[in-house]
Image (cartoon, rainbow, N blue to C red; front, top):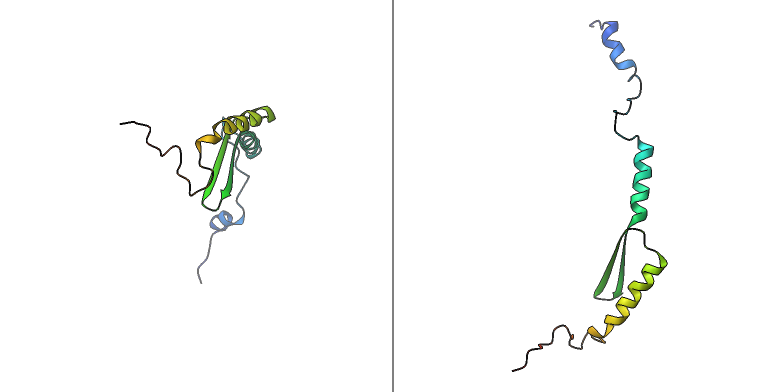
Amino acid sequence: MSHKSKKRKAKFVGLGPAPRPIHGTPDFDEFERRAERHAARHEELRYRIAPDCKVHIQFNGIATQEAIKKLINYLDIGISDFPKNPDDPSTQDKDTTDG
């Protein structure tokens, strides 16, 4: 049986003090606070609006109720550019050149 020195055993007794944050880097709590602020300003919503159609809405910045109303009005204005049902030809697909 071999003998292990006290010095070698001491390496495995404890891991020592917790590492300190490096100067200039945020600690975990600050990182978490920054992530929460970022998440509040960047939101992505995904909806299935038909069996074969999904919509993705991405907000970059704080989306207010007024901004949502403007988005709804904008979509409402452009609704006639889309077919009424999936079997109708899209107005976007129509050839607008005459001749």
